Length: 171
Image 1 (cartoon, rainbow, N blue to C red):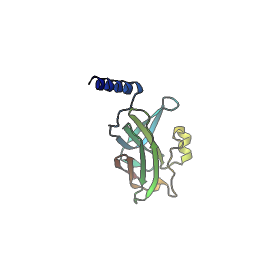
Image 2: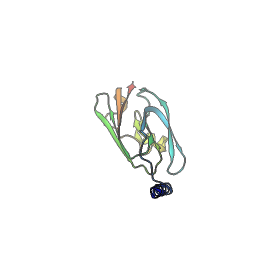
Image 3: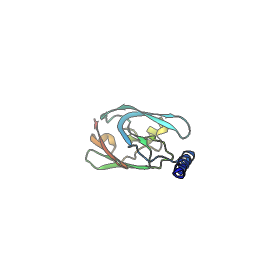
Image 4: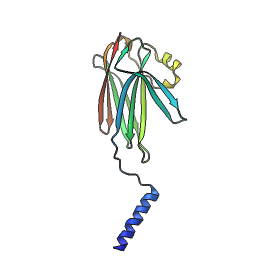
């Protein structure tokens, strides 16, 4: 009996010393928005935060761009994310994929954004906002400003989340 207690105590101490990670228990939380703008705050080389500005469900086609913003919270496991942007005719206008491997036993928050040009070109957007470089959605032959109506943003996160966000572009 004494040997079993000693063995259990030894294993417990080894687990504490080597920092064995607890099993994943949190459920990933998803916050999805479409906004007029976003402020990127840099905390260092590898750390930044995105503050969305002017979020809603209806926007003017005269805006230079829209920000497709997504926040994933309580991420303590590897995940993959896919979003599709459907135009008013329900055709896929753009797709985006992201995959992350979580290191350590901590829950992380991810802030992801893509910039959707509405009445401006990618070059104009990046000249005004250099932090948007590499995040601008490639536009098709028809400018988005000419595709007024209800757009749909579909997001799937594996493991286990799926959501839709609808917004309207008005003339």
